[in-house]
Image 1 (cartoon, rainbow, N blue to C red):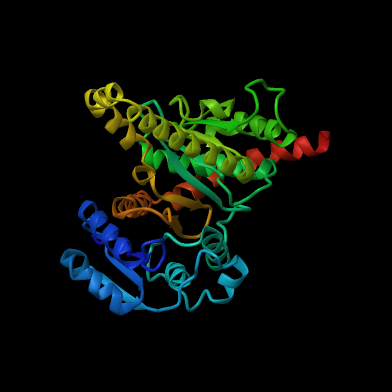
Image 2 (image 1 turned 120 degrees about the vertical axis):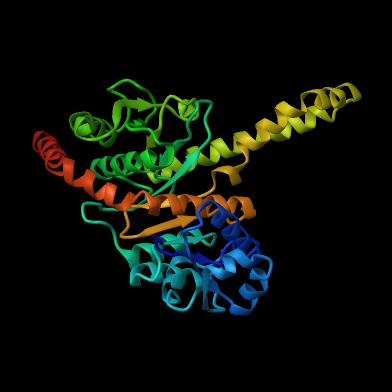
Length: 353
């Protein structure tokens, strides 16, 4: 049985058509049942497809030469949504011509167009941007929100936890993901009122869901491997993400500098090269590429603008898995299961305030 097509914004990303098409071709080798809708300049897409006959046979091209740049403001992007490759890819999801969209373009523009075009799911107030991060354990960790919502209330955090757990079950295969709220300490008295209230709600309803909730985690524990989903507001999440990425680059640059400082260091590098190559692979963002806007009436995945073909392939593969596992339907079912209980708890908190 064929699955819904994946719409690819072939003009998005720093490298544009060549890398996006090559990435889609790599992903299709792992997900042969999928077909693709490649959105962008038809001449350039056809030229890129010459090297990928397997993808060409399973793809349709939707032509446009209009592209949203990295400098375009979301308001500017919205006005051109119907004519740009990004906007047309997302509109294909709304129209039912594709089951999901992937873009490496402007994040703010992608969020604005996706939210306005697809709207949020019933029971979700705001969509959240979720991504996978590497850990020291045998699991990647799902972290959300990473920048879509700078300020969040209790209800938003509870919804993010439900969506993150559903996403984690798809991508990690864990039946009951370990969910924690990001905080400045693990004690029940730490953090903002919204965080403490969200923790109380999640403790009361987690038994109705396939998740394990046990309070808070701190930023230095995110990548230890003892948590599967970390929930926070978009401001804190974006700061934490950039700190983690910056630290990874710092460690990599420090190792390169150390290994080139002397002849003895260079010899040491040759001896330890297998270990350093493993470290490089583990920290390479291309191997964890593909952030998801959860909570929309449709699947939209953001690829790093600087991703190479392997990185784009990972983003497309994430999209394919979300479609195969019906993540939107899973989130809907979980929201329905806990909706009344969580609403009652939050009302009780408001009345006692």
